[in-house]
Image 1 (cartoon, helix red, strand yellow):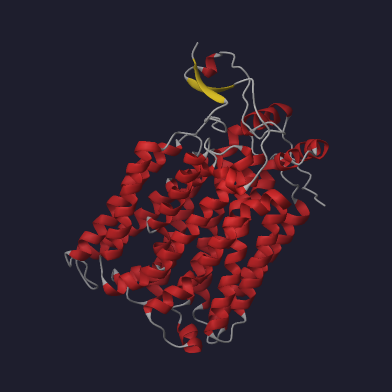
Image 2: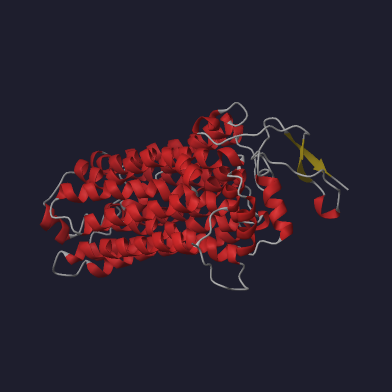
Length: 491
């Protein structure tokens, strides 16, 4: 069923991760397309003018179905396999994009977004789990961050596609981006299904050890890395993280090593296992963090970038579209750095310090608007807001966009990883829905309310993380609640 390209370098687990990460590209492209499309003249001519509430509903309709499907995505990924769940999601997503491209009235367009959301909910969480399960520990951070990099590449592509098509004197101005999106997502779905092998960790949990060993070899994962993955993510039968008794070496100085107790019990995957006493706290924290990631306001910035830049003084359509595209380029560039340094920055550290920067910028912009210091034609206030929007996107991309998603995936043991990640992504979609639905309404009714809301939510998250978030970088936390203890090894 699968045939990976026969390459000696890079290792095939890297090419598999890159191909799987392309799901992030289609997600990012959809995110950046919908805001500019809904303010295009041709779109308004075809569907009529609508209120800020309807605008929010059009944009956010994808998110509620994504939230519902993502709650079940983990269970589907456990039952059918990671690859089938990802491929199914990509195929459903392409159908939804095609419906939007062919929409003859607003109801059909919204229905297409709802179908698209079902697909997003299936593949986004599963692809992170898949990469986490095939990546050697030393490269887990960068490879698990690659979907975020592809998301930013999709953001850049979507903004500039809309910047180019907006001048077309037909409905192709807004239809063409969705035609391209449908074609790309269908290609992604079929490529994943026919070219990528199933996760060897999932195969091991199904008792298919021979198949798992063949996949490890097909992925070019050497025996030493394979042993580390299995030990950190759990034995094939238990799904519990088991580390060998550490032998002190100079490289181990000051590093936490997980030591197993001699007794472990078999565990089977089930949705409610994510709330078992030994993992409940990590599951709830992951759900909270993924929700607050959206309540920072990032998708309010991404979905409504042209509107935000217009409010800040870039009144012409071309200027606001171009500024949105430039912001996407900036996000893409800094995400490359975040991917490279993903395993050098701690998850806890990047979340806390990044959150402080994000909350400061949101509160700064809100204060400027509240003081009536932002004017469309002159004054420093509008330029401070424009620069702050860029800085907000930069800080989010190098901190919360990467660290939180990695934390959610790597803080769970094997038997709950897919389910807990699906639940966390579900909370992310729910919060995303609320942000997308309410942002245009808040901006219309108050020039500063949205900024204070997002800044307050972000600062509250910093406090929670300071009190309860543990560092997971370089540690096996798969069974921290009972069978594994963390030992500091010093020479």
